[in-house]
Image 1 (cartoon, rainbow, N blue to C red):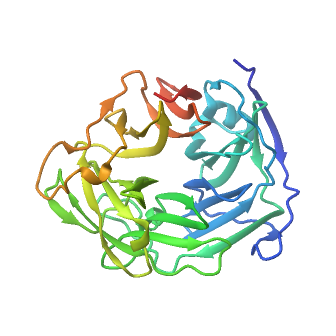
Image 2 (cartoon, one colour):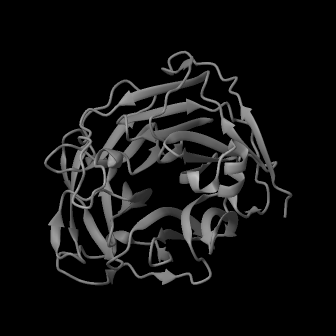
Length: 354
């Protein structure tokens, strides 16, 4: 186990804007920092729901590293708070993403109402990514919901972006829009030009026993189903749905195929796909149903769920050893990095892919 170090020094970016990238080097103003995803080398995408925009940041972090071995960082929220000179109860970790080249880990943070990006490098140093003079690009989403409350008192605007992913030159964005089909999946080319309206998504929710168009995708990953690229999308209470990427065109109305109902009163938190011993698996962290491991083979063979059910479709195994997982990402071919709540401590550690 490495000796993990906390450093309050700011990380400055020496990255310069590349011709044709659309990046400009100046101060970056964030109004919120939510979902994260890496794209081209060193480019970190950040969802800023408050301003209804997607931001690309050139971190300058492009030095290859095969991995740092095991990570065991207890009380990461306390260490981040100490690095920023504040109290742990002022720190909320929104998301994490592993840079697949450097293996450095980036976290979107709220310090009170102030959004920040933090970095944990392979040497164990925690630092703030300075946004004072950094190469970045921003694109605004044209159909974001108004800043109003839903039935539970939550801001609809803050669900403009609920998850991000980058595939073959496009950033896919899950969240809400102001359209009739409020559940939205957007596809934006990078480098950015402009963002078109998203596709409206309809699914059958097995636990609720009805078709729904207003609940956002909570987390997704991409996977090839029947030789075609798809999103695997998970919703609250907990349908698992396949959606062809080819159908995610501006303004299209798309009906996803519900291939599993994983149980009511549960919120999916994060999801990855990985390969072990020649077989593909889905790993999903949940708010009340732990971490689930599902086989990813032949997902097209599962019949579409179109009637009310509590549990049906793709089978799953609950991994009892993994408790309190809030966020996860692939660290390398054999390990995932997980943010876990253990009693009063929030810990970051690598876990062998099961």
